[in-house]
Length: 85
Image (cartoon, rainbow, N blue to C red; front, side, top):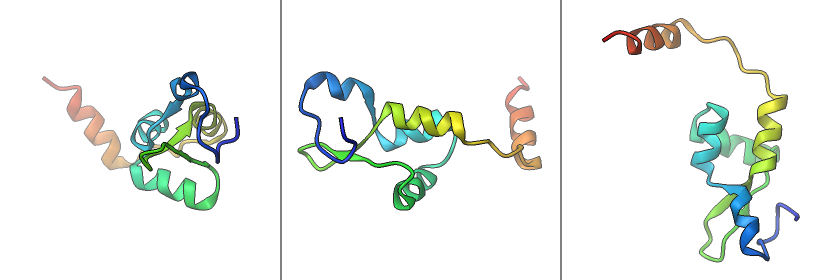
């Protein structure tokens, strides 16, 4: 299935995620997902309602090929605080 056309079969939607779901899977912000789309790294398709979806295979490809930068001091502190009672 081409990422730019609408899915033809209902099972195609089982392998598609919302932009918010993609952000959670990749551990990035929603804005970063929009940047990936604007840069052409992710190509959404649109439901008849006009809502975008991303092929899960493309999101997983990005996750496998993108190196995550080291956590900042603020992120490390936030993680440590979450671990406290």
